[in-house]
Image 1 (cartoon, rainbow, N blue to C red):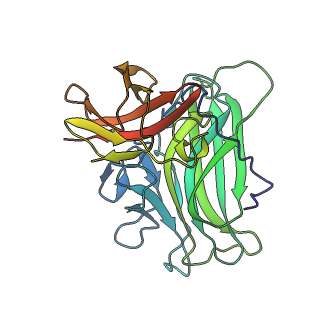
Image 2: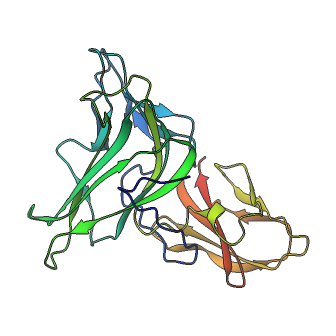
Length: 278
């Protein structure tokens, strides 16, 4: 599928360092009063809710959906950083990454804007991108961050995402996006289907998991090194070799949250995102 000329879709490298999941509720699992925890929207619950929780998730149990509504002729979704409180970061990342679907009607496009600042509010970088092509399945994208001259360290980022018509000053009711799994840095751990094992399937049983992380690999006589990392890239399960097609990893000592199961065979690594929930 041809991608928009106004964005850059980076190739995914599973052997790179982990992307940084610095955003609160980056996988949109937690919602309160029709709002994704830690994020802001233009919802007015008694009138219109362009932003809703969607069960159509890339990972986990939910994602965020933004749809143009019929309220007041039309109301486009606006979604981003929490009102009055920007997302805190600690370095100058190369890209803003996420997975998306886009039900595109007429000339509508998804508009993604972001501004990065120092701790004192001085601008350090920005994103201004448009996603122009429809996507019926989850599509990974990495939007490059343009930095201003100088070597100032970024300490916060503001993000705003919406839908607009490129020809008319409107948007079409029924156009919608679905987003999941926001990160900063480079796409890595979430791109399982893009690595050297693209034709093989790792099956995870009971995800979210509770007492055990259980999975199977398609090889009849595997020899895989298994490890588990948390969302910061810290290893939380000591590496071990599994020579079984099905493996069970005790997870009773892991706190509820998101983890990455690494299955390494030689130079190739498969990664599955696991949720622990009891």
